[in-house]
Length: 241
Image (cartoon, rainbow, N blue to C red; front, top):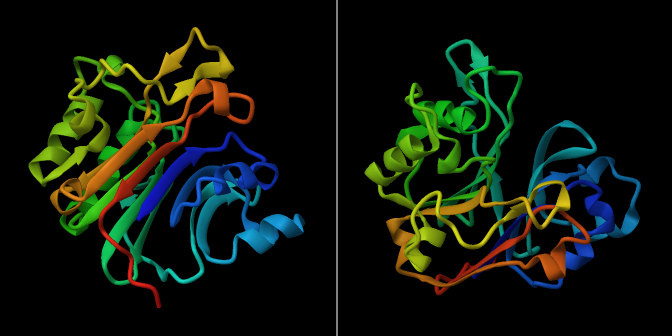
C-alpha cells in the first residue's frame, strides 16, 4: 500500500498528472480544487474516487484513491466549545482503518492558529483516533514552540504519543522534532528558507508495516509547489471491493 501527501500550492488541475506518476493507492492533497466544480475534464476523469472539503471550490483538502478502494467520510466533530476548526477530513478506508487528512489553518485565531487548530480537534476526537494515519500539512514545527502555550507542537506530539501515535519520519530517521534534516517546505520557493511542517503520524498498527518513507526533493518538485510530497509504503494490503 502506497500513500502520498502533498500540498500542491494550488492549481492542482494542472499538476495532478505529476503526482499521479507515483502510482499511489491513496493521495492526500492540500490546496486542491473541488473536482465536481472544476471545468477541467482531465482532472475530473482522474478524480473518480475522492472526498473533499474546503471554504471555496478552488482551494480545499482532498483524499483521492484508486477506484477499487472504498472511502467513507466520517462524521467527526469540528466544534471545540464555540469555535469551528479547519481543515480536517476523516475517512474510513475499506472498513479496515481510519485516515485523517490534515491541512491546518490560522483560521482567524490569534492564539490557536495552525497546531492550535489541531490541538482543539484532538481534544474532541481523541477517543476515535485508533488504528489510524494522520497525514498532511500541519504548518507546524517544534522551532515555533512558545513558553506560555499548553498546545505547542511539542505538547501535541507528546499527547499523540500517549495514545500510541507517532511521526514516522522521526521514527525512521531517529532525528528529533525541530532538528529535521529534510525539509517539506521551501517558503516562497526559496532554497534558503527550508522548513519541515508536513507529517505522517500513525498508530502502532502501522509502524510495524512501514517499509518506505521518502520526501521529494526540490530538484524534482519546487517548479510545481513550495511543498515536497511525502511518500510512504506499507506491507499492509488494501482489500479491493
